[in-house]
Image (cartoon, rainbow, N blue to C red; front, side, top):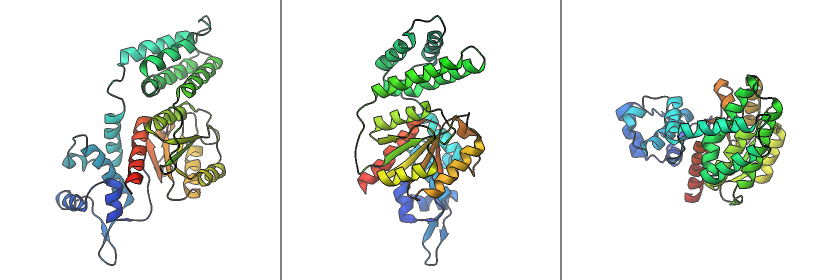
Length: 311
């Protein structure tokens, strides 16, 4: 996700946000022509927020062995894609054949003549043997896609789709660890816009954040902007996460995000995820950070927590 701050940032702030020293920044400026900061009346460097976001992504990719000379030619979207490709799955993730086998078992468990508790037993077994985080990261997205496709093609009724969502939600909530309550660390609020009823993606994000040690407040679906603002104020929320599915109108989603960004304090970040983000315009996402994977959002939260601990 990319948080775009409208005002230019000074050198000290850029160092703090990116972890890059001023010596490195000046070396890149001379060698690569990036970044190219402006100057204030006193000659101090001022950096554009878009450049700072690119620097932050470059710094993360440097840690996994990539070279600055290669990264500097990429735009922000390409850097996000590179980072997501590196972070998208844990090293012990099940292979595609295992996932596909379980997808077929899931669809069979939702058929009319399946055993009554077949779906419950399947989800219980996967969470128990694979672990909650791998289940959410690999199996649940594949399951949700397959169930949605089965409904669209008429293989499955809407009642079966709702049954799937209900069981998965119950099993995940039961398996979640005891919520963390660290007052000094960034607190996260999760919700969807009015009209967006799909919440499994939001729940998957909550799992990853909870396992990372975050304190999450899940308001579930359809929270109006004034209620989000009130919750942010009451519970000292640092990050608001919004999930948008492909079923959500892009215009409505964009209007909601921009209304939310205008209403929230600038210091409160807005993170956006879900398949519906792919069709949103740059203007709709202005001031927001966009994540394609819940795990990368959790890693970003760890960055914020580390900055707070070290401050």
